[in-house]
Length: 337
Ligand SMILES: NC(=O)c1ccc[n+]([C@@H]2O[C@H](COP(=O)([O-])OP(=O)(O)OC[C@H]3O[C@@H](n4cnc5c(N)ncnc54)[C@H](OP(=O)(O)O)[C@@H]3O)[C@@H](O)[C@H]2O)c1
Image 1 (cartoon, rainbow, N blue to C red):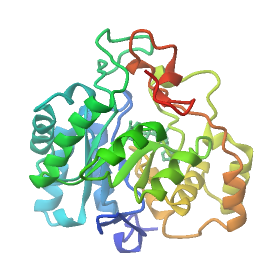
Image 2 (tube, helix red, strand yellow; image 1 turned 90 degrees about the vertical axis):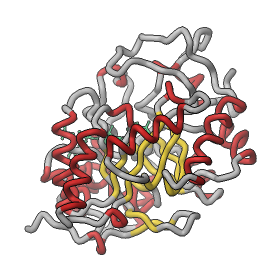
Image 3 (cartoon, helix red, strand yellow; image 1 turned 180 degrees about the horizontal axis):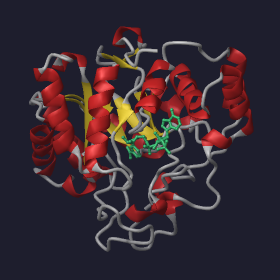
Image 4 (spheres, rainbow, N blue to C red; image 1 turned 135 degrees about the vertical axis):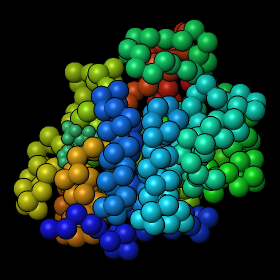
């Protein structure tokens, strides 16, 4: 079978801005496990195979190499810039006045682009941790969420749209209480919200809240991130691909359970951004959106397997006095201070 999946066959999702973007993209976080070269090679392969949406971020430490890949693919005529949908994210140590502009400028130089399609606030706190640090590490300067501080960052994001440096802007790792507080204050509403979404962590309330507000959910760790950094693993974590009902459905479709996670995501309506450096995996991840859909019954079964199991708990972003990772996620319905 050819390794090319015609991008025209990949379903599209319409944002409130009118822009239509592919229903699936490729993640580019090497999880401290894959080198920047391995990730950028995978991006090069993925463009040739028909991927058009790539989820990048400054903190992934590989935008300078991925930029070379984009530049080459565009110059060689493999793909036009306007056919690509490229996201990037401002990291937590670049929320201060003037820093967001500096951050996107650096990203644009690295990615060798004049604009990105979506620019996200990666986490809603200015809380920095060193790349690759262990799970217990804490930064004494870390602070709880503040509406004023966040809006100071968001205003800078809105100016990037005015300047044409990004087409739209998005948020990531948000909660309903935080969105309730900030959405009425936004001049430009987020077009997408990136959040952890897989069959073992479906976040139905946040998902419905976003859809109800015309904001497109984009799901990270769509396969349950089996290769995530050790600091993000705990003994109680549930692996999405090991849920018995999901394995049964995978057997019926004669595919790997990872593929069922992605079909479920696309049919539910979120945009999954699976990561893989292996061509056979990333090609099948893209192709599965174009063939052999899940039945309504299978979708209902998968809806019922939610284990409310958050994998990316974010404990390295906690501030002094915080009780535990739950404080980042406003579990009692109010913003934790
Ligand atoms: N906004 C945020 O805060 C945030 C947080 C986390 C992630 N992200 C984004 O989300 C992307 C995806 O998340 P992720 O990489 O953590 O998790 P993921 O996509 O759920 O899992 C990736 C792993 O799944 C396996 N896999 C992929 N395709 C497969 C297939 N067809 N068959 C079998 N196994 C397959 C691979 O493991 P093997 O190598 O073992 O095959 C791969 O390393 C990231 O790259 C990043 O862009 C964003």
